[in-house]
Length: 122
Image 1: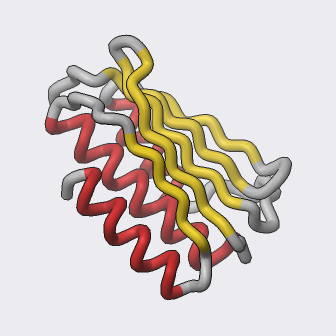
Image 2 (image 1 turned 60 degrees about the horizontal axis):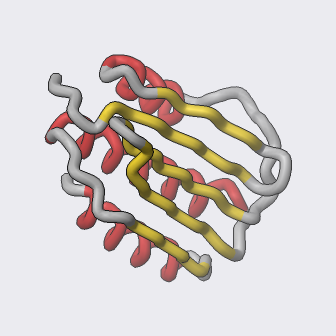
């Protein structure tokens, strides 16, 4: 799935859950493998917001950061740092396989900060 398609699905899912969605997408050229991993990350993150966060808003920012892409997804929900479930663990593994990273913060809602090389191939 493409990032654009996942962002559209995310907007629909969040709207259905009563969560305001604030996407900000910069045009970023990505290798197919990187785009696929980021699309899956968006899907998993939004699923977590809908199911667990109790959030009122969710922001998604995609931007170019040199030879990398930076994706940040954050909500204003209950936050906290619970043990990672299968979804987050799988996301972290897929990112690592392509030289990407995932940082998670739960201080004020939940924030996922993802970085991945733009030109990676599987």
